[in-house]
Amino acid sequence: MHINWRGEVVNVVGGAAQLEIPERLKSQLSTRSKDGGLGFSLRLIKEKIANSIATLQHAFPKSTAIDYAVDKLGAELALLKRNPPSSVSQLMGVEGRVGYAYFSAWRTCPLKWKGIDRYPIPDDWHQVGRRSSKLGNKFHPNRNATHPVNAMLNCAYGILESQVRMQVMAAGLDPTVGFLHGSARGKHGLVYDLMEPLRPVVDRKVLAFVQAHTFHSADFTIRADEVCRLNPEMARQLVKVVLHGLELSER
Image 1 (cartoon, rainbow, N blue to C red):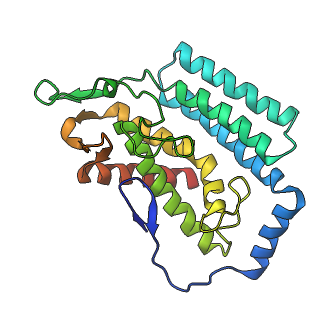
Image 2 (cartoon, rainbow, N blue to C red; image 1 turned 90 degrees about the vertical axis):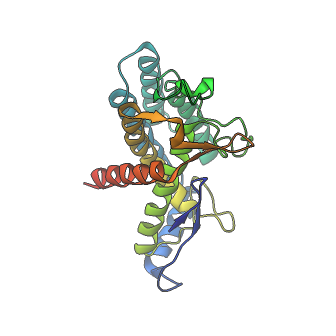
Image 3 (cartoon, one colour; image 1 turned 60 degrees about the vertical axis):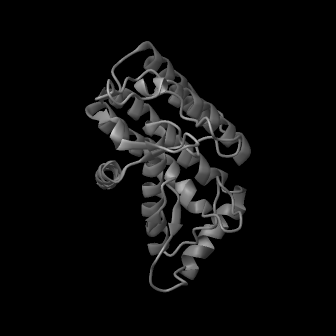
């Protein structure tokens, strides 16, 4: 797998070009045809919310903001169990509300820095801040990160995508047949679907690294357009953190 600086998987090198197992592909298509994949999608989002609650509870010190987010996510999870949505689009609306509350609780988490007297950093780098980028758009609000934590998350999700894609292909499934993320041409919808419950697991590892690490401005590069990129050594450390976290989650 080749991941670019945005955290996007841009190249995959493997063996045989056709790896789908007919029986599994038939089951995959049958699952989607029953109810548009709503039942499968609902299980994914329930698991994502539960993992998000665990991340909030274990990755941050106790605070009013964290308590509020945990209560909000808990209420949404209970509602999904009590009164599940009737379509995938309604389910995605729930996922959007959950994501907003989840990431809002991160904003005031402080970052530790050294050497900033000689090499100043932008004011908003002293805290985790918003998940979205100042250079994002309504379709891709997190692309082109302008904050180091967002740059790390984008890279971490790219690593996660590569690992899930390999597992999907090894299982003989079609990565383009998605449920939550549809089946747009050239897009790996099933991969993005299966990433959802694992995103909070990756977040937890990134947040633990962020809070334990004292950063230096040399760990990152700011381009002329304000896009923030990880320097090679920081990227290598992040790869180790994410892969170790995914190994633990599999156990």
